[in-house]
Length: 314
Image (cartoon, rainbow, N blue to C red; front, side, top):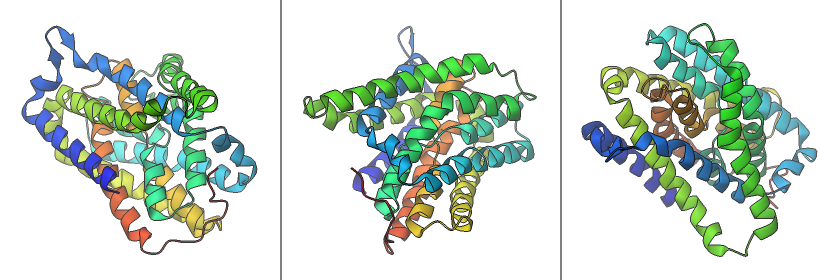
């Protein structure tokens, strides 16, 4: 809990500094710091791979209904919210498409933390994050082409390869490391979560600095829209799970998976498309917003921890 609070505060502080002194996050000498975003994301995704195991994928056999419902909610509710808010926002097209991009991204690692704090079905949360991440190279480009193709040019093939490079290969490498070398390099096991947190903070700082002018002009509106997207995702994810008659612990896990996206990946895609100062704004803001809202909801739910089904994490 305290680590999550420190992480959220760090993001807020870095965002404030990057807006006030953007040059600190734009370059060091002739080196542009935006070039760090993709490598950092690959390290973060490798860390995700080391934190999960084969069991997080095989566990689908024990709870296929929960996993199926969670994945359907993940790739329908948030894209729908994203495209609706983008159309109603009145924002410039490339900035508005960033909102859609957030909605079309897979679940983020922060959802697992919130699931753990709140007493949700952690096993389900881990499984959904793993599966949605592996599906992202195919599903995210297709959704973006369908929902945002009219607003800007979307190269689905290029996006597929970008997500594969940023997500699939590093996660696969992390899974192999975890399976064959877990415990043999304790320093790596202990340091990866911290490195991942630092990486996310740096990425958000760089993107905020790169899009400072846009953020200063449109920041208040984008913050409101990102908060609304996050809250609607949490609420509708929970309601959908309950309508499907899932237990309370599983409903909470799905709420976090739907409402808390991998905004880092969305930022990386914006960088690869050369639109970090426009498309990258919404993902940069969504990160800290979802952590604040998620922490509040997790704290509220923690007071009434439910009995979860299939919630043992092996």
